[in-house]
Image (cartoon, rainbow, N blue to C red; front, side, top):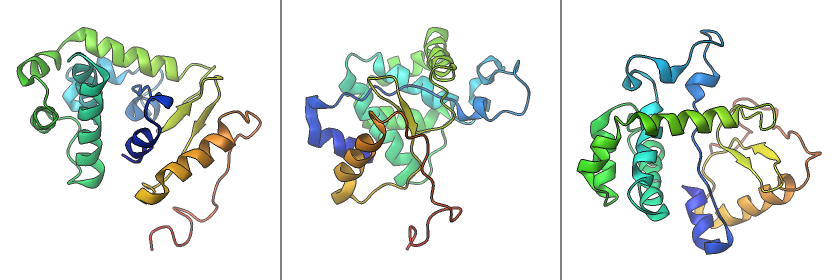
Length: 191
């Protein structure tokens, strides 16, 4: 959501290419052969259906369709009532609010080609080259990756936070991790 504010400021000078990543898969204790996307019903997974829904939104023509859906989904999940990510109806309502063709969207939720695209994103993320383990992780043009754990910054600080993050991690591949040692969050962050 705060990256939408950053994108609005930067316009065409910032290209954000959202990719899918399954926290349920990466955090699974079922062994390396278990795959969340190979289970009987993707609606039993915590968030896999939401990733499929994002790909279904992309099919509706242009990046703007996905952007509208994605922002509405993030808002409903993180600034709203914690909308479930594995149920059709809330995702369909969000698609409708985003101005998508709802009938096409419903059909695409069960398209195995879309699920395959989600799986391909996840598998690309977890390669040794990228080593992604959580979200959000940023993959910069130079191939460097950086994970960022944060609350949503205040609107008036969104661009400054992004610029500082990119300045520190975008080209400085020798910076591997910075961490505030007061779990679960730094003192005062929730005040």
